[in-house]
Image 1 (cartoon, helix red, strand yellow):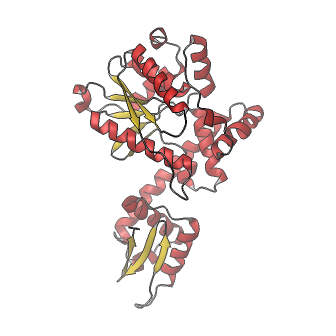
Image 2 (image 1 turned 180 degrees about the horizontal axis):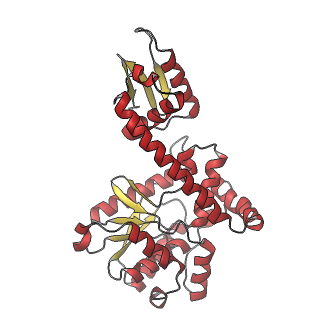
Image 3 (image 1 turned 90 degrees about the vertical axis):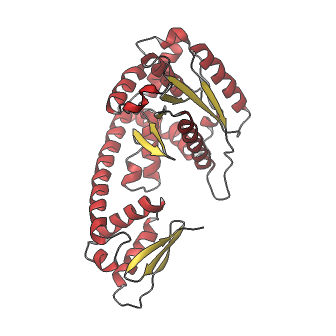
Length: 331
């Protein structure tokens, strides 16, 4: 591991350096012992990322390993993470979470939410500036295809963002343009061990079916598919950014909470855009297309003082209150 850490041909090095140049550390982080944190599962992606981070910022990197408690191999993953970080001289914190899913919740979503909560809490506790994640170009392609399979709008088609905040912590994905096979080939060529999650081959999960069935077909027909789909995701992200700017301007016009008569002066598409923005910004509420269409129909029909609105929207309800709207989240 120590020999590989200094290898200049790690395919993650250039991507990480470029990402860090676009997302510099705040000046206040100069005194923090370990401002860079790598979410380290022990898999190939996070292993190559950890090695690149330690090469760029020796002695300034820490690792966080989340033990989900969902499979017997989790203990083996933890042991591998401890051995690897000890060999590198990287401080490691292991976080155990209860990632069991609630009724009606997908196991993947439950594990992802538990993981982000744990990583954010640990980063905030240690004062880290950013948690680095190892998703690469093929992961971005899977995300885009998954969004397409679900009929997602622009936020879904934008794929994974290179930088974002969650639970009060900052996260980064510096490897979204890096070929996943290239980083695995580099690790194998260096003789660097990494773990392989056995659940990755379970085609019960939609993402795994995409990885096992669709990506090989795309690779055969369109060898540059990962870069092409990543470019489409960037275009969608730019378009969504423009819609967010328009929504913020429209919210200043219609009010917060929105006044119905002022909403009615906007076209239907702009009404939908500003309502999504208002709901997402205030309550992280993301209504379905059918729910939003019903709300827009009711807003259009709201021409009398006695017209009532009470609609199920996401996990709460949209209500009319006087001349405006109010969102009532579920308790």
